[in-house]
Image (cartoon, rainbow, N blue to C red; front, side):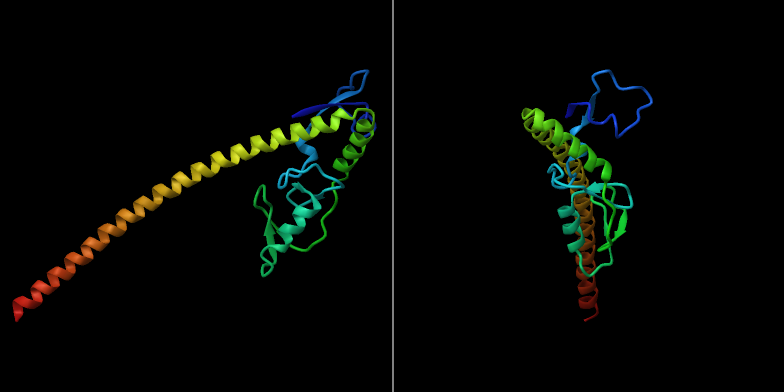
Length: 173
């Protein structure tokens, strides 16, 4: 999930503590991939007002959904944003991607490791989503059973009232 890149961030980020002499930096590979499609960004991703970053293609797909609505919601935090608006690029991620490109020219195996770790992260994230959805499913099934019980009780009461009404009706005849 983390990668070691040599000397490429020293001009971009000023750390409170100086980077070691060899300028090795460890960054989370998930920062370089879209949280929706899990692809490594090919160019500067876009930033929504909530601060979450997405690739251009995914943001375009989000904008194309629900065309009858003015707003859309962030896939991560569900905060609303205005569809069709032009959102700023995340230039920090773009700079990191450019630096990684320079490093990968020197280390061809790094790209494969980056993709493998990105897939591991995507798998972990999918597993967490499956767990959350399973929990939601169980809760919804419980609510459904409760509603079915209530409905059955009401149905029995309704039938009892109908039988009782018929009995009263025939008693007057």
